[in-house]
Length: 272
Image (tube, rainbow, N blue to C red; front, side, top):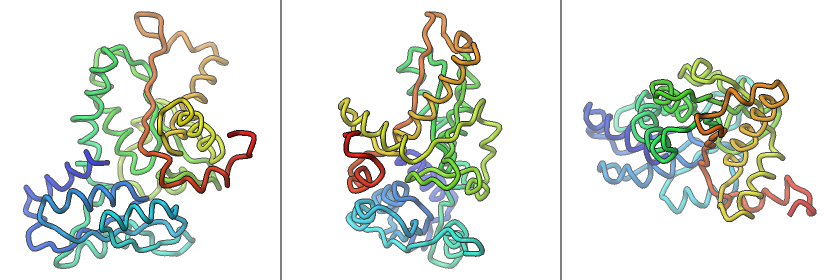
């Protein structure tokens, strides 16, 4: 989240939107708020307030406090004012600024400009499948824009949170209704992923030496689901590159550390 956060603040400063601002306010599941707290100081803003989910993990709440964020709890309930709307309202007042990461083009632009090109470079231009969880959708939208301009054929997989499930940092199709980006046209295929499989695959990643959290396991589960579907439908060969390989990347946006108490809640003892 440091890349889109930096890009949003950089553009805001260039456009004079940070002049006389004493507080930055944003809705966030946690990572963007932490990045804002660190980076805002570089731009001369010392105070960051964040609207966060009422069920935010205790570890993530402590991380925000360490970063200097003032957290304000919000509840996703029918008829309730969303954190996105509240951040937008407060951010329009004198002395406040909201980056509005759910509609600010500087969000996907950061992924198109820096993140996706680095993946393409490290994969030697042989990437064929890219999977990302959908939160702000900036990652998917920006990376899709870049990969669709390359010479290779990259299948873009968007991973949704299944209905009545919860994974930190990602959204269900219903909750994506608040997002302004055209994320659906950016994905070649969309899959739904649940809570248990996200934590289960996060656990497997950690046990393999990759300290990747639940939204990372979420993206990996979505990738596996898409690949299994392609294999069952006899379409797996269409995903191979010139070397005959299915070269896939999934995005890991978090670590397990803020959610340590959640693993034993969602998984059975034998799974460890």
